[in-house]
Length: 425
Image 1 (tube, one colour):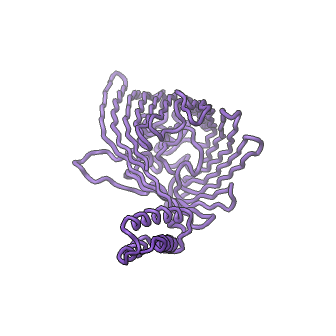
Image 2 (cartoon, rainbow, N blue to C red):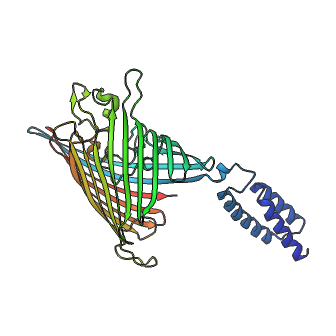
Image 3 (cartoon, rainbow, N blue to C red):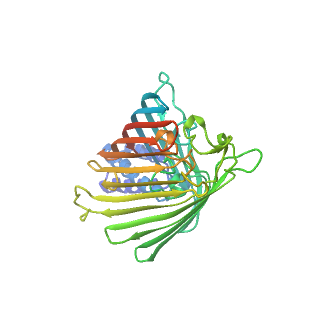
C-alpha cells in the first residue's frame, strides 16, 4: 500500500477519534490493518496517539459523544497505613493507673468533583470509618473483618461570580473556612450546612481579602429548637515582600440552642470529650466564641531550580475565648514549621512543632483534635511532627503528642506516637 495513503488513513482515524468512543477507534484500526492499509506497528502508534489526544479532549470537555460533566470529572484519593502507640496515666487521689494500647490502622479516601456547567460544581468523597465524626481510621482487628466505607462529604458549589461561592450540603472543611491548626477543629471533621464565601484579590498591591459566612447544622431534633452554629470569618493574605506572606483571620462563632441542650444530644460518649461544664445533664454555657488565626510564612528558596537545606519557615498561632463563663474560657496554640512548604517529591521534608492549651469551656469538647487525649478540652501539651518524601506522592511521617489535663480532679497524662506511610493518587 502507498505510504502516503497509509498516513492519510491514520490522519482520518485521528479525526474520527475525536467523535468516537475508544472501542470504535480500536475496531476501525483493526479493519485498516486487516486490509493492509496500516502495518501493526503503525496501528499501535495510532492507538497510542489517539488515547493521548482523547484524554486531552476529555479534560477540555471537547468530546461530543460524552456529557461534559463526565469529561471534566477529576478524581483524587490517598491511602495511609499507621502504627499507633499510646500510654495514658490516670491519677485520682492516691490511686494511679496506666493504660497502654498499640494499634495498626488504615485510612482510605476517594473523592471526585465535576462541573455540571460553568457555574455549578458537585463534589463527593468516600472514606473508611464508621460513625466517628473525628476519625476516618479503620483499626486492623476482629480477625480480618471487612472495613466500612462511608460518605465522607458531598456538596454542591454555585459560583455566580468568579470571586463569590455558595456551598451547600456536607462540604470539606477547607471549602467552608480557613483553619491554621486543629486546636478547634479535628481535620477529619467535614461540617454540614450552607456557606457563602467571597474573595477580593489585589485590593492594593499584594493584599487579598476574604470573607467566609457559614450556617452550620449541629443536629436535627424532632421537637424543640435545633442546635446550630453561625461562623463569620473575615481575613486577609498580604505579601509583605516577595519572600514573606502574612495570612490572618478573625473567627466568630455564634451557637444557638446549645446552652440548656442535653449533653448527649451533641456528644457521643464513645468518641471522647466529656469535659464541658454541665448543669445537671445539660450544657451550662453558650459557646459564642471569638478568636483569631495567623500564619507568617517565609520562602527561603531564592532559585526555583535549586533547593536549599531549609526552603520554607512559618510561624502559626490560634486563639479562642468564650466570654460566657468567668474562667477556664480561653485556648491558644503557637508553633513553627520549617523545611519544605509541601511534601510531594522525594527528598522533601518538614518539621512542625507546636504547643497548645485549651481550657475546659473555651470551646465545644466534641470538635478538637481527637489525638489529644481523645479530643477533650481542659488539656495542654506539645506535638512534634516530621514528614519526609520517599517518592513522588509517597511520604513517611512521625507524629508525637505529649498531653495532660489542666485542672481536672482526675488527672490524665498521655504519650502518643504515630508512624504513617501515605500514598496519594
